[in-house]
Image 1: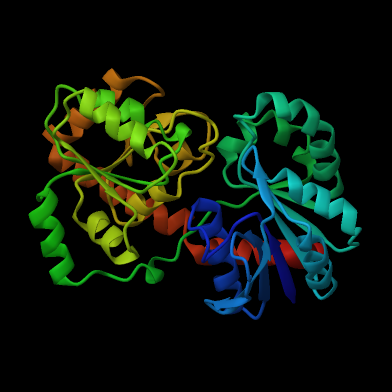
Image 2: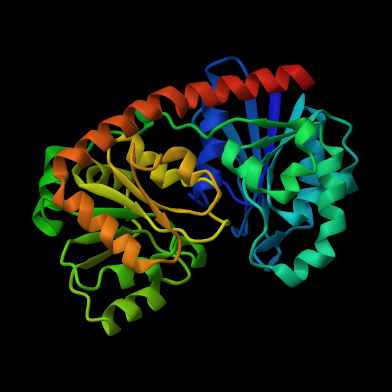
Length: 368
């Protein structure tokens, strides 16, 4: 069986949450006899096909971008060529231009769409896109929600509940290479032996402005790993608040990211909008047995982090509640460690890449 994954970005050009999911599915499927092609857009002037982790990453040239949506003329031909050889086409939503390609190329192949998130920010443009969106979702054979929480809280998914399956995102811990003692010592010396950790792209919906407000009045080190469009804004806020306990580390290598996951006291994940549909870095915290603090936003974050079991869940957009949660875990390290152990157990029960990949292959075989 051959599967074609289609999304606006992918490895190696971008390493966000959806891109990680595509990589984990394609990589894992290759071990089970399913070959995968991944097609995405790239700003490279001379796009090349690259072999990554047992699958091929094809890239069409990005012509322009508007409202977080990439457009490309060459991708129509590229998609048609790859789709002809595919047994199943696996779309990753949201990407409105993908819907256009789907209908323009008229591929009569079995189709799956993983519904990663509702469209939240572009409310005005959504009014114009809405008819195409519903036509696209009605046309595909199967829709996958990444958590039961999101299925229940998404009005869009409720319209198609008869063909929605829930397949939680999974991660392969074996792909997270343990750091050397030298790197561990480096970070211990730089940020200290006890700190909270956030990992992610610095975007508007991540709630980091709330985290900075919560950091007022406490002196616990908070390490922020990642870069993104609001990085300068956040650094300015921290400066204005006079915060000395915030470490902005920018984009780091996988080895350094894992070193910080190994060393951290707990993972804090303050996302406050539904655009945070799951939370890959929150799941990474569970995978490494760390207690978690997240906000209740009706999405997969509270499918990963169970309140008062694997960590603490606070009302979204509430810096006082977030501060209290950080203080409680900090002052109760034995309880925090027990939560981390339960988080690890939950990861192994529900969120391994093996479980995710096998569920997708079963779905492919059902519709192929």
